[in-house]
Length: 146
Image (cartoon, rainbow, N blue to C red; front, top):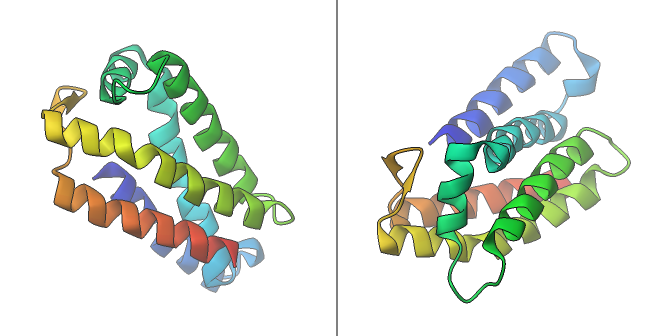
């Protein structure tokens, strides 16, 4: 739920900051890009924290080789994408890349939910809720791109 809260809360805060005079956040799209970047920092950094990393590696379906490498690559891509969202000329490309990354990472979320895995000692989000969240995150990334 932290990514959802970061996205929604970040959007509201950044949008209000834009409305009160911070020009770089004046508009729904800059606020959305900022909120997505915030969300991606919350989701990307744990890829490199020992206890979370173990859980992320366990989430990778067995069909994919080198799960630890995949966790590293996805963490780097999430953080790079977050940075890209904050650079206006590359933000649309970063947003589309992130939408594609979210689609590519969804099988790991499905696998984790079906196997009843945990993240940092807490059960992963149930699949119906996770699916709805993933659709929202992908839609937000697409909206940030256009």
